[in-house]
Length: 493
Image (cartoon, rainbow, N blue to C red; front, side):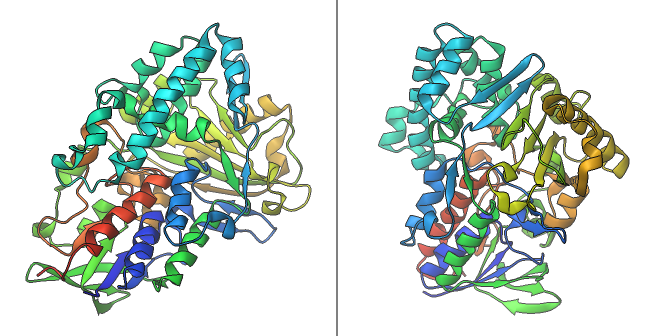
């Protein structure tokens, strides 16, 4: 039966769910409160010629993104050009740097040069990671996670032990590698999952395969090209996008979501999908209709927030790659101050993305586009004084790495973005940037449910529910919810 479906939010999960439900013949409306779609993957341009992606910048797991387009009879290449990065990225340590080559055989030599025997160990590690990736990303994460019974499939049963759900990622990495630089390299990808390596199941070595094994890519024009392409796909299926459309209430009658209040007007719908922040979505309901209490959210482990600087330089920056990780300080200390002490870091790590090294169109000729990101605890104080303090530290470390002095004097565009902005723009709980951490106690059925348990036609999608944080998981999340709705034979009553 054809339904009229409302989708709150236009991030990857919202656009994904819109495309799949519209393709099934439903009338689909996407409501985005900001003036540009894309959620955290928005983009902005400046008057002096810079184009900045506001959020995602790592194009990993290209096959998962490609799957979305293939489902609609097209390919990413129809919408944007992908470039494979070489090196994939650089890591800066206090005693030098390490470049991660594009080709696996070259990466293997890097491992062997640092630690005798690490090349064959990398082969074994990556083969295990490949199996986890194939089971995890092709079967495990595609479940709606409404019951543990969903995971009693022959394929998962055959590979259950190989998934390493009960081993910590930290112990798993150290079983193979001893050199601190190799350990840091192998632990880095799980930071995208929002928890310390000691708190993440070893199953997530699948991230190493999804990144290093399948390569690090860049969509020319910026990551927003992916959002644009997915929006175009959804609109081709018939989905309608409404910008500057603020949803202030989900209206319930007889235990059913019957309408949304959008910009003060009530609009009726048969089904509602919330791609907005899960906690925020529940505040649009009376307490008796919410899945979770405030105490529940306060006791969740959230992935970090972050401090971001969007910078334009009126000169080229020497010695900087497209992606650079500044790991001169201790990862464990920074992680402890994110997840346990909950404070601004004393010795931070940070990440620099310079897309103009690959894509000259994102900056004026002879200029450089630079994005700095420092992970932070959620819910802590955020003010301009603190932002500037850490900006000065990051610039100082950039100068030390590049040999370019007085970098700050060459900046002709500067904008910061932090906890307060995540709250204002995305209603993000405590200013989180990445959703819920993928700890064992917050995996699968233990994540917030995709269904409202009291309102049968209200669903949730995105990085605070299954399968978790990240661009590919968010795309999958939208498909999971759409599949649940498309399988219904009638509107729930």
